[in-house]
Length: 256
Image 1: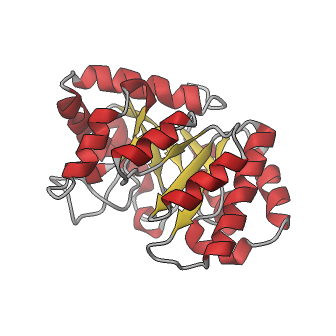
Image 2: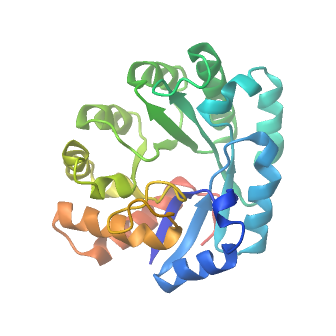
């Protein structure tokens, strides 16, 4: 059994066939999924999906791209309100993205810090998106040392992974680790201890080989897990067992 620890089932790409997509995942023994929120305005959408399917959980949060639209303290109360929902098991995704810079850095940092603040207060894990923002990401985490969470869709170096691990975070790997040009990232997979790894699709994006360029979906989680197993030189069953355990250890509000 595997868990897709990060997907976006409320996105338009799944509007026509969501039930079939979920069945596809179950057919590949991906039993649980976490559908991740990116805008407060879409919080009810992900909650409704989680309510409709017993093996799906959800989060509440604001993607760094959209942080400019949520750059005041009212966000804190909105996060707390939605976090009270029984199927909301995490905050995020949130974080810093200096590659696209769709929101200015100050707005991103402020928004990220509000998520970390609420996460620390409520003891909820935070799903962290970080791209070309290593220094500022660590600086924010240092302000909230009690943060529990995960670097999702990790694409950084072994050194950055170590900084996350040193702060108690989990590292989640996606289909990127199957790409031909991802040799440095595969070294990070080898480096991160198995008891701190999650697997995800980030679907509908980043479909792994052999589906690259197509719509990604939770059923493809097993391609990610197979690559982790190959790199770790262990069985797929070991990866499945460990990453499922890790998921429920981190997202401990989720009930298997």
